[in-house]
Length: 287
Image (cartoon, helix red, strand yellow):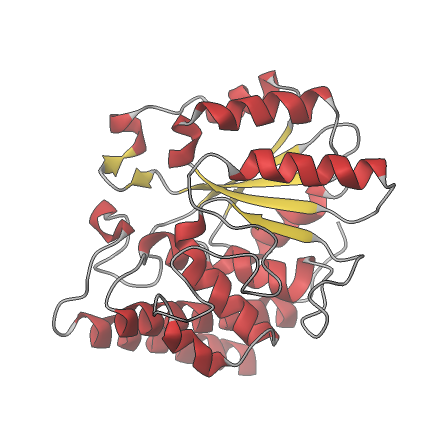
């Protein structure tokens, strides 16, 4: 792996922190939405949109772009935040989240939002969509990658395993599936509701190359994606171990913050904690 400079890591960490603040502000303004998953995945989205993806915000339909398919569409507040920071649309538009007439609905909608490859909704379907796109890329001899972002909870859906089988059989090495392994879903902990372990071995049994990373450690995130792009003849699964609600003390590892309306004072506390982290990162960046 080519070494990524410490300054680039700090830049990506600062962006991730901004994405978390955008998530809190936009969900609070909407009065509903999801917080835990988006906060946990902010580092992944920062890395993707500002270091990994080959994309062009000024030309979202550029033919040679990498494709990013968000299967767990309910975490879209963090994707919208990353897209706004990258220049797909004004940051001020984030405050239209989940409003009538907005392009930023509770799940991404392909025809209304340039840069959104698919319309998501039913959990478990995104990997199958990504497999189809990856296979088309192989037919057309394209060099772009398909990144499928999935939740761990949706691994309870059978369609996801059909897609895993198909990708392994067809050796789709242009497909990178990222699993947000935060161990929660709306009703509790995944291992209590429907145990997923051994998750790594499941993918390997379906002929996937598996990489496990700390999804909240930027250097490890970059390492994982770089390793993924070096693999041939197998689809790649990155199991990203993340902390749901990352950066906000009263949200971290608490499944009720999969989606829960804010109470009085919680928005202010969350933003204050994230701004404290931002100040620390800025201080470290200046040293």
